[in-house]
Image 1 (cartoon, rainbow, N blue to C red):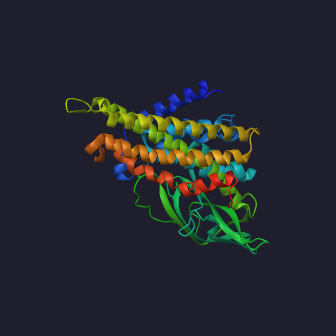
Image 2: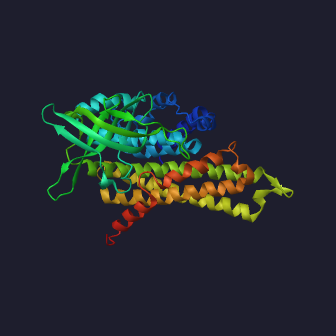
Image 3: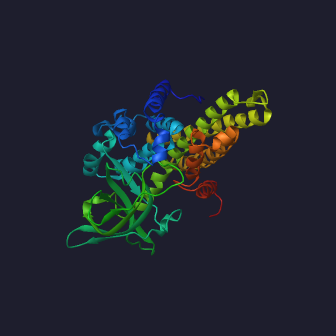
Length: 396
């Protein structure tokens, strides 16, 4: 039994950390203050291969080796350690943009969309959440009707809180929509790809958010929006199954983002406790402070272990050596623990910094604002507990 990442993964971690320290850290506070999405950073991330970690070589990716998903989590953690907005840009760009096309798309769809997405020349988004359908995704109201005369999908409805959906390089959004009714009377949900600029597809103004100020997030609306029949992603009626699989992977990725945030809080708090002097000695000499920092170290270790166990299981599932139920349970567990630990870590770090923790010149203030969404996106903490309970065989 080994709890160490491979030498290759550790070398990759150092590469991403160097990139994050050089290209992201010096600008993170400014991007956050200006609510600026750093579009110029995306091609640089593409050049580093970050968007192609889980993609085959034929589309410009790394070849999807057996540790590919673990590599993605390493990259997300390291970017999230310096800026959560950049971390979620990668997480959503791969998990919600590339993966649905890679997993469920036709050969024609993959060949058309993936090369630019993998290279970082474009971004894609996934439209699931709606104003009245968040955790209750089955309540989707967006509709898509197939026009028999033109063989086009006619999409009407709205989506909410969609990441990477309105950037200057966003090329396509895959959205879930009702396309009919099943034999048992339930809504038939399908996924349909809608290219940016399609008539009837409107990207609403960017949200004014509590955190993630340098991340791109918009509402989307569709009014008589027409796309070819061939833009159906996967099989008709498989949309519900597709987004559940997408969320399983996304939960592990969000957990990695949370680990990066908690790691940053630990490092910042430990350094501050060593150097900040009060009553004639460093504040870290006081047990009240030292014990808080020690608790941060425990949370980081536990969150990282749960996250990389889940990532390993995902890689093992891809290799055909594990079952989906194992990954689903591990994803919910790591997402629940890591995100709640990250929120606690930002509160503790802010307390360690005292008044300075309330000042925007210190990163802990930005991390404090960024943390809360981690407990909400990709399934709330309440949903994770439901998934875990179901995995334990408890009555639904």
